[in-house]
Amino acid sequence: MSYITIDDSKCKSCYLCIDVCPKNLIKKSTHTGKTGECIVEFSDSNNQCIACKQCAMVCPDIAITNVYKE
Amino acid sequence: MQVYTKPKSIKENSSFTFCSGCDHGLVIKLVAEVIDELNLQENTIAVASSGCSVFLYDFLDVDCIESPHGRACAVATGIKRATKANKNEKFVFTYQGDGDFASIGLGESLHSALRGENITVICINNTNYGMTGGQLGPTTAMGQITTTSPTGRNRAYHGFPIKAAEHIALCDGTAYSARVGVYNIKNIINAKNAIKKAFECQIKGLGYSFVEVLSSCPTNWRLSPSDSHRKIETELTQIYPIKVFKDITND
Ligand SMILES: Cc1ncc(C[n+]2csc(CCOP(=O)(O)OP(=O)(O)O)c2C)c(N)n1
Image (cartoon, rainbow over all chains, first blue to last red; front, top):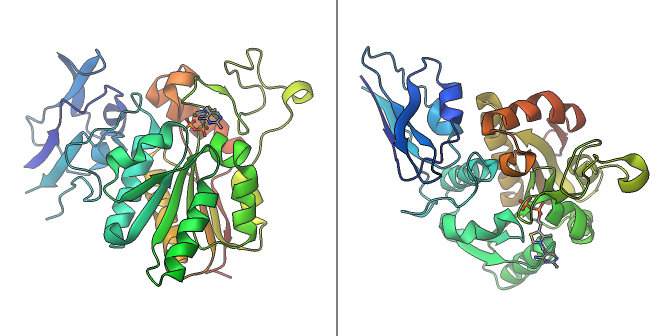
């Protein structure tokens, strides 16, 4: 099981994380964030996330943290 | 178990005030990670410049000083020499925009490299004057449209752009000069290694170390953040090659 934390108050809807996720587990949500655009959400119902941390590395706002796999 | 967390030297509860998708945040994060890894937080004085880098002290949990436009290298020279003379030598780095480093401050920048000042310089090359609305800067590419070059940069009127990392590498006082990018994961890792190498040059007392980071400016380029990264990857790296131009630790 992998875990990632997305801080909704920091997400600026740049969607760079959506681009890099090799499993396409990050998507646009229906909630708007601080820029007025939809922020991102992570869902992994089939336990596909391998905690590669690319989403966190590419996030320019440090909105994605605590990425790990158990 | 490896957990990816916020770098310790980024202030708790601070969030970057940059535009959506701006690479400034990414680079500051890399700088903070290197400060943590080299255990420099307590012994560092960062010098911010005028431009989007100006708010560095809001984010980085190290001692910071603000310098007048273009004068970051001069201010850093003073701090480094004064702290050394007082036998309390600090680790000093500047964090500057390309307009700041390579246009208004070119004299300070070049001469501190020629003097071989033992400081580190991180220069964000986003090919325009970002903070003031995307005017043509010293690094604007030929043909690039900006608010002050609405028909594109042209040779007859604006002349050619400057290649900072190449010029700095030519200075005898330079220990390390590299150009990096943060437009994909591989380059983000390489950029962090280059920043670390530059910091280590200062720790070893080898002289001036310089890292130019090719960065995006989605707001002024009028592109989405991912299209901006593609533009860097396909267009800008052709003009500004990603390369280590000088590294005296390898010679
Ligand atoms: C002496 C002086 N001249 C002009 C300005 C206005 N000014 C503030 S920021 C800036 C542009 C900075 O651009 P750059 O260094 O490329 O950094 P960026 O904002 O793109 O990161 C200018 C011209 C100033 N603050 N001081």
